[in-house]
Length: 115
Image (cartoon, rainbow, N blue to C red; front, side, top):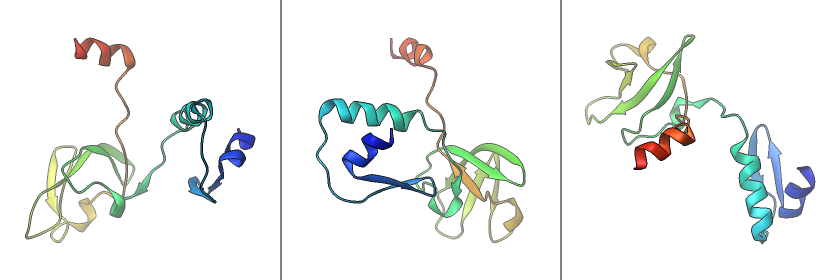
């Protein structure tokens, strides 16, 4: 794994990959890298980096994980956290603190839904 990453010029720093230099990948290397990256466990990210377009994701707040999204509002910042919606200005303690993308559906389920 490290040999492949070294060859393509990637280094992992605190769980994030950063390009050290530009590299051209052969298809085989690209496929290996995709498999490697898809096998990594998702990590929690600060809520400030969460999607702002009503995309649903997993939100975390005080030991609780729920489906979460940002409610589109012009007058305030409002989150829907597990179906409960609140404005951050009114209830700052109800805002999620971290997020991660929803996992992909099971491959067999995705195939059935596509039919």
